[in-house]
Image (cartoon, rainbow, N blue to C red; front, side):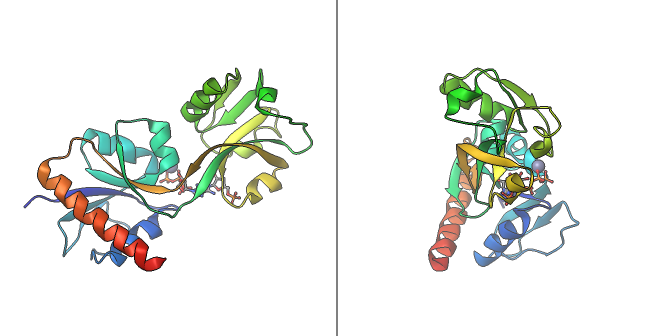
Length: 212
Ligand code: PRT
Ligand code: ZN
């Protein structure tokens, strides 16, 4: 029997809500976060637990058929994937922030500046669209400390409450993108798998309607 392979974040901000959403959709599977692969007992679904950054590549390569991951990661990895459904959790925005006492009158102020980010592809694309030429420094974590240690003039990072920026003496000046968890799929699924995906999406939509 054909099974749909879904990749979820193993441990992180999206893990619990991803599992909860599937369970609310009536899909039963073992609650053992230490296993990297498990199976649903009442829906043809195989579940893979991975790092979120790896999910777009695994789906693009066909190791998994679909995945739940932040739209920010999907945009940054830029694989050929289809957003099958927006899931309404993990909401945040990718924003540019500057030291709070630094004057800022508009995006043009970023010309010639150094911007630290873990999202270099999204930020480059955005600045290009805006006609801004800035230097992008890719760093993988603790981006918010970069201005304080003289590594950058501005940062671009995910923001939800804004308290991390505040603690680090930064203020949000430009929103580059809004993000939330999404269900992504390979565009070339077999007919059987595409039908399973439709069933899954139908159930996820029903959960969201019931929640509202
Ligand atoms: O281990 P793995 O690689 O799987 O996980 P990870 O550490 O890379 O990602 P994780 O679990 O931190 O985040 C997973 C996804 O959650 C992200 O890709 C986003 O889509 C989503 N998300 C939602 C967030 C936030 N909100 C968020 N606030 N991801 C990160 N943050 C961080 C942000 O980077 C900053 O450090 O929280 C801080 C800001 O939060 P506030 O509330 O202080 O503004
Ligand atoms: Zn990650």
